[in-house]
Amino acid sequence: LVIYSDKPLNTTYLNNKIINRDDSRYSEYKIHVYNSYNLSINESINNRTPLSVALIDIDLFKKINDTYGHLFGDLVIRTIASLAKNIADENDGIVSRYGGEEFVIIFPNKGLEEAYPAVEELHRRVKELGIEHHGKKVKVNVSVGFTSFPKTCKDQRELLNRADWSMYYSKQH
Image (tube, rainbow, N blue to C red; front, top):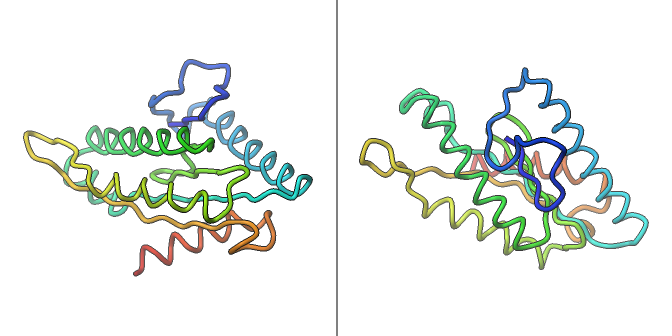
């Protein structure tokens, strides 16, 4: 599942379609994500502009799949992807599926003060969410790692690593 805010790839598989990692299109999407990330880094370096990155992981996703089934797990991914896309679109960001149940949002030209409220809003929307399964609302949550150049990270090239570390820290606390 890859969602990009305003520059779709030359495929019809965006907008909440699930892409299997074995699908040849997956490589194209992964390359697109890294290219977008690297472009944002280079623009930030060259223009001396801020850049923020959020890494989002769906909590207890294996348990969701084991308890409610993979079709429901896919619905959870699509629902959270849609929320992340809305937040990215509202804030001129770029969002993509980063891993199995992980997403990344890149906020070009947004520092800590501009991007962090958007990430908090995404977290709030997810926590308020109840996804229906056989007449019951199932609550889900996400762990978020966030970092921002230059406020919390002095090297733009380290943003993704720092966001990853922060996400795992949030999972433990």
